[in-house]
Image (cartoon, rainbow, N blue to C red):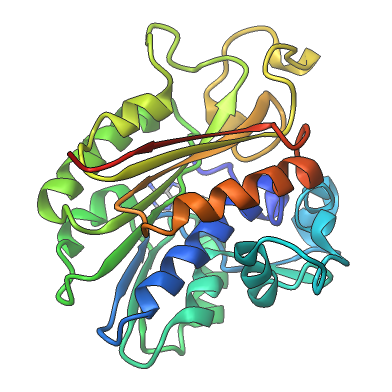
Length: 298
Ligand code: SAM
């Protein structure tokens, strides 16, 4: 099922959160000269016009990146300053993860992007096909990940941003991650997930974030940013439990989104503790509308 188009959601609060962390982690890898390898398992189209096409319909960016326009130069968290340098909040298009990666790649760094949707793959190829540092694959990123691990440079970041379009994603992702961690336990992994009023896994006693955090016993972080009160589902979140994908990254049925990060830069926790209150104030339910848990390696 490939009904999801990220264009409808480009630049929303979930994008801002995941891209701040992606940029922070790639910048950290760039501190050393040795090249890195970045794998984007669910890449999307790479760039999205905001004033036309899909993004102009839902205008989710108005509650996301547009909330950050005009703050450049003010006293804001450093991670946000860096995000704004790379993504223009006043721009007429918004960079997706592959384009953000391109803006950070050095001469010897490499990236591999998977995208299944035929039209988004064509758009991605048009955008990045001429850049020899990229390998672009019109394939299933869940299936393709294992074959790329460990990367030759042994310095890598794996960005996993699924649609959760089918309930199977919730069962598949932990399997894919466990397998990936066996092959490459020292990589940095960033995994995005929605926070839904109705858990699509009703028989599970722990949250999906807790399930993911339980897959690894090394250093790891879990964060959540709330964009709606958790306890008051909107009317359209009622009825039959839906596969999360029918909401995708959209605010419908969601009260926010979260990230799990394995082997984060040691500086990330402090950076997030500074940044999340700011995001809560600008794009969320207030300065306390976030959560962070940190597990150090034993
Ligand atoms: N990572 C992108 C970004 O930050 O700009 C957004 C990606 S969007 C949330 C998820 C994308 O994954 C969609 O474009 C969808 O077509 C694609 N997709 C869905 N299932 C996939 C799979 N199994 N393998 C690769 N791509 C997939």
